[in-house]
Length: 140
Image (cartoon, rainbow, N blue to C red; front, side, top):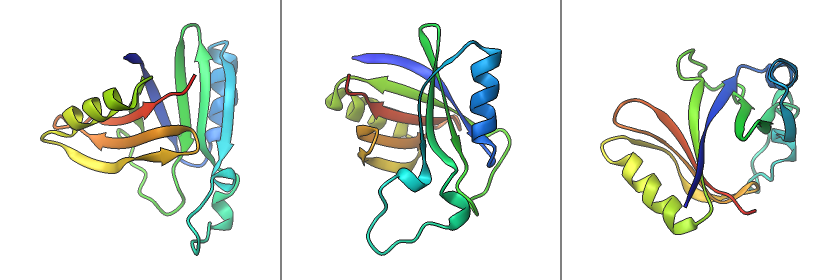
């Protein structure tokens, strides 16, 4: 079942500032903030020092919706207009696979579905209309 569709903002290194801003401006409750440094990395890979304190995922509850925020990874292109994506959350891995597959039709796979620290099944796709989606299974 699809649980919801939520905006996901990508900031250019000022994610912490954005979290505080939206927390205040929108009376948001910060449910969690995780940094790149807290994220488990593949063996043999090194994390640039400037990335360690940047936000990989923040989740703010605003009423009965969510606003999610992450910093752009250092060195990756940052393009205004591509800094807002849509997160679709499901409570079933099979539904996640189905939705991801349908959104990918005629589009482009950005990140294949995989397990992450925040989701048993997460992936990113750019659909045929140029809209970026983050598809995720949520464990409640």
